[in-house]
Image (cartoon, rainbow over all chains, first blue to last red; front, side, top):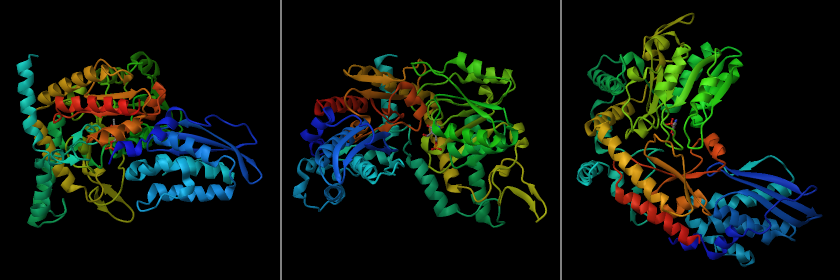
Length: 147
Length: 414
Ligand SMILES: Cc1ncc(COP(=O)(O)O)c(C=O)c1O
């Protein structure tokens, strides 16, 4: 295993300069995610326009994988419909957990996260933001954890 | 110390290292550098063999059978209790209770002593440095009784603020519970002063010795503490076994904790009479092989000598502190004057979790996270730190490898 598979340049870049970092005022929905293993705390804000995610922001502290994953996610989901986001969610889930999964084409830059599956202890770091976004889209406000 | 004496000690310690099978392997293609001893230490062959011997030749239930095997198992189990007594210099084996570990020992005291002594308006006094297992059981006991948990402050070096401790020690304080050594920072607490101050007010003291037991020699009579608790798995022994030392007069007055076999003398449906100490607090079949393994670990540590262990570990600590301090952007968290052999640190621009993964790829095992001490992390305004904790089997060379690996992590994250 090569560390450069995990910490690709795209990931290091998004960790250093996260995109869409910050918050959104109501009526944007907010959801909180928590990874008790490493103490990562994440809040995802989602502003809907009908079925379309019009704007998305995130804030919180976390490792490079969780920050880069949230940043990449925010770019990928902005302007997409709920159904398109659900498709992405399943694709990213497969990417992170299935060793044999071919990288689906629609993932684009998100494919940079494929190295994470070689590091099972880190899969939750990458998936936390997606679970939290789902929670925000569902409109529920119970905090979610990766445990 | 002279260079020569240092290398003598180094050579001496290197010999003991070969007793540890776990340390003889490669992890991720590199010889394992195990620097997570604060979480759990490794076991020497003497401990592994003691458990194997028990399982192969002595196993039976204790305190029950008239048959020979039960007597052999009981002798081995009670022999381990005597080893613990000697190791802590307790007056009597009646004061040595086997538990599942530090956490269970504290819960026992919190529920039995706390449950019977605490009234509404009473207080329990702890410190900011505590592990969650020396916080939550007291919160639960306080909640049940309507009592209040008070927390003594620390300073920026991670040392207990004695003035704050004194100020919080009040006529309402029923118990002081404090760590002997902080697991998150390594600070050694001034336990002699703590005990003296508390006793002057007639308040008993529980010391959480989980992190102290592998580094300091403990004499509960000299410390004059009322309870001392620790886990076997941090003392080169098995997991699942630990100890509660309690002053006999206090244990006598405390109600039993769990009910069941072994802790009774007679049982009928109207009345049960409880067994004498220590069995009153050991309901059910105990972890017999664990206790025997712990006894073997104590014998092993005694053979090396805690004085030698402490001396070598202080060399490791000083070397690690000096070398890590040369890294730009690295901050050591916890700079108490009196420290056990662990270093908590952060590196600018690299989350501890990433550092942990990167070091692991070089075979270096450290702990990253909040170390089950979230209030300490909050005090320093950090979500997490990286922690390297050293045992006597660690080498100067391993510390140099740690330093090199941190530098290459910085290179990767440049
Ligand atoms: C200071 C301290 N107290 C308590 C504990 C809990 O020990 P155990 O998990 O063995 O019960 C630990 C273990 O990390 C510790 O370091």
